[in-house]
Each structure stands twice: as C-alpha cells, then as structure tokens.
Image (cartoon, rainbow, N blue to C red; front, side, top):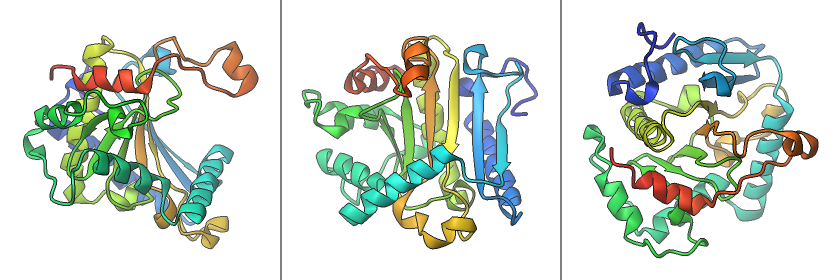
Length: 270
C-alpha cells in the first residue's frame, strides 16, 4: 500500500512519499533476497484498469521467484553477448554516447536537490536539430546519477527507461541511501511529464533487476559487469498495445518516433 489516500496519484505525490516508496521496495527486496531459495525478484506497479491493476487504491507489488523467467534470462544473455563483443555493458555504451554527444563530462552536475528540470531541457534542446541517429535526441531527463530516455525500439509510444549512470546489477543492493533522493526526483519528473502530456494515463512501471548472484546458473556469470538494474514506464494508450498482431508474432508495433516522443516530454512545463 503506497498511501493512506485512496485517490493518490504517484506523479503528484511529494518527493518524500516517493522516497519512502523506493525505500520500501529496497527493504522488501533485501528481505526476500536473504532467502536462499529465491533466484529473482520483480518489482512492479500497475496503475489504472488499462494496465491490469486489480485494486483501485494506490499500491505496488513485489514477486520473488524460485526460478529465473525465460524473458529475464534472454535479456541477461543478450547483455552478456554485447559485453563479450564490445568489452563493456550495453548500458555503459548508451549512456557514454549520450554524455559524449551532450558534452557533459565528469564534472556535470544538476541541482537535483530541488528537482529543477530546466537545466535538462536546455541541455537536451541545445542540439535541437540533431538527427534521429543522435541518441541524445531521445533523452527525457537526467540527474547526476540517473538518466531517462526513450529507447530506439520502444515497445510503445512514450515508453521511458530510467537507468543508473553507475554500475549496479541488482536494485536491492545497488540503490544505496545516497541515490534515493535523486531517483525519486527523476522518477517523479518522468511521471509528471506523462501525467500532463497524456492526461493521467494508465501505465505499468517495472524495476528490472538482474537475477540474484551466486545462485543456480548465475554462479557462472558476473551481472555487475554486464547489466544494470533500471526502471521502465510503459503508458497504456491503446496504440501500440498488445493486440492480435503482437500476440500472433511476438513483435511489438509502435508508430511513434522515439525522438518525437522524447522532445514532447522534455518540453512539458513542470
């Protein structure tokens, strides 16, 4: 249960409330990870009937599994293959490209303590004529330690991914106290942008964390080198949702350009 208020909207919640939510997710994850039978932990929030939410009252869910789901293992294998061929993780590669294109450098700093997004807008839009080949044109928001962007092959319109700018594979161990205020800030801003632009959409939020290390087949791998936990936010807008083609082919369709979606969200007045 996220709030005592029956009509609480996460996008409009206080920063302290979102920090408390992240802290609760982490605490429950740490407790569940202590069970040696658990191999993978999934954190998620379904918001609205279009997302499959079963309760109206604001809530999140955490599921601990004694197995690693096939989709999760597939993502891990692709991440390992990328690392083998490139010598660094796909997450490091994406973030490095954005930082290089925007000339951020190691000294880059944002006033994240007051959740001010104006610097982000200025940085992202200063290359407003960037072509679709520019990964920074898909930037939505960033702080000192996190970056939010629209993936090149987003599974639906306005699909957002929030990734740490530091190496960390599992959410329950990687989200230390120092990062919680920043993550709460960028998560709130991303949700606000969606809330304003899409008129309070239903959405699915998922924390994608690596399988727990040193258990089962994971003993053979080092996910800290190949993977980073991250948050995905998938607005359920109808267009691009699972329908006959998606169920029949396993392929997601999305008619929106990620660069256009990112520019729209960046320019939302917060």
